[in-house]
Image (spheres, rainbow, N blue to C red):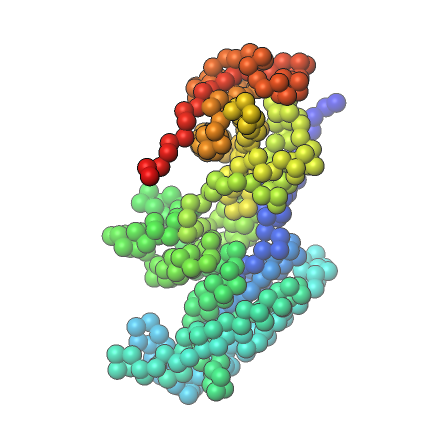
Length: 447
């Protein structure tokens, strides 16, 4: 049969599938400034956000309204006053805030209601909810400055938000909050987004930036930072645009609470949100509270990801075939390296406690992530687990990766050196080579 090249869009869709599965039923909080609504690409941006909704993501949208507020103040001849980057919201400014936020809410809802043929919204029904989910309090007088109706987030109605999200609605939060006494406060959209993400323990917080992406000294895009690295960058000598610096500070704050991942995406790049979330290359900067990739024991939810990882290797005959049912029964034997919900690598340890022997099996790394030491990390992790179980020898059966195991201390062995039950399972058709590695006893902690 003649082999035909795979169409680019088919290859992209296949590559996106793990991310689609990983993001389904996750909660994302997405924040953008009022500047976005003034740009020609605003409808396309909202349509990309709506696509996330159709792919099963639970969404909270937080919008700013600074330019819209200032436009109304200028039209009324009112003074625009800021101190320490915070607006002083007097009575006239508060009226502008309510007017601007209300108008922008209607515009966003209208764009999310579009259903024209031949558009991303064709046939899509997006239900949008808004309300008094944010309780606020006044900033008060600081350093002698009375900020009047400018406030800060006091509490987020987490249960109310969750009820709307679980019913399939997108929640829209304006930069406003309400007090128990019925007062209205002008809030920072960035602060609202952080508070909502922390309260919901959101899986992701996403900021749209109006400046170029974050780059290093060689002008290479910085795709990932830990919160500590972001803090070091902010404290360093490099000049970072004010908006980008604010997003980084917000990311650090969120990551050091309950939000594991914060993305900063250039709003001006068409489709950047989808590229950041559904491609390996991404299109923004990810800030995480800990190491981007996590090595951890496998869970039952990882079975699908492990199958996607090992099936190509099974088809080549490198690994023994495992069914989903078998994996589900043996999942406690596995360890994985996971990145943003995608399984990059896996390995398993099968102990034979009576013989004090263990089998290292199913060592697999995604083709795009080989060469980064992930297999070594998994092997070391499982060797440590084996020693803790009292295992004194580790063996592997392999057909094509003998050199890799030899380089890591495994020596050729014979079938008779394996536990009897494992000898009986040996597949002579595969004719796997056997390698054995002695393990030093686990160190005892001093008493």
